[in-house]
Image (cartoon, rainbow, N blue to C red; front, top):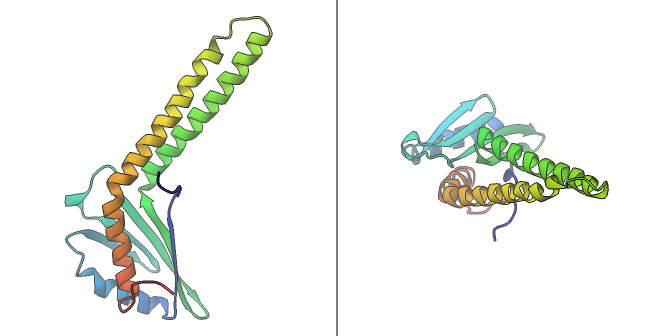
Amino acid sequence: MSEINVRPRIKFELSQNPEKVREMLTAHEQFYLKELQFSKKHNHCTIEIHPSEQHYWSPYATFNLEKTENGTIVRGIVGPRPNLWASFMVLYVFSLASFTTTAVIGTGMISLNKSGILLYISPLFLCLFVATYLAAQFGKAKASSQTKKIKDFIQSALFPNDLSPK
């Protein structure tokens, strides 16, 4: 099974100022124009998979360039699109809340010698939770190569001479 990352975060500390970091990213974009799509506004950057290669599970990266005394901190998220992530969170919360509610009410009804049908319905919500989790893992696996492309771009743009951040 894969590791559990709700929304994978990136954080790099660089000695250059944010303007220089933007220049490094812009200079490196030319090598990825057929695979990725870029947007930069002030110190906020987004990277998406090129529309010709996008699918439902395609990842999305958003990060900020924060100026510090020592240079710049690049901080952001590489993961599913915000609307897809929110949909899965809603399904998780709904299934767990429904499971808990129906189990508690069903148990209470049985203890009052009434029909405990809700107690027998509650496993359906647990099944929904498991199905949601499995769908998320399927999507994560389907998007893994595109996620790697985005991470490779960020890595090679910010650390051209070195393959690992310091």
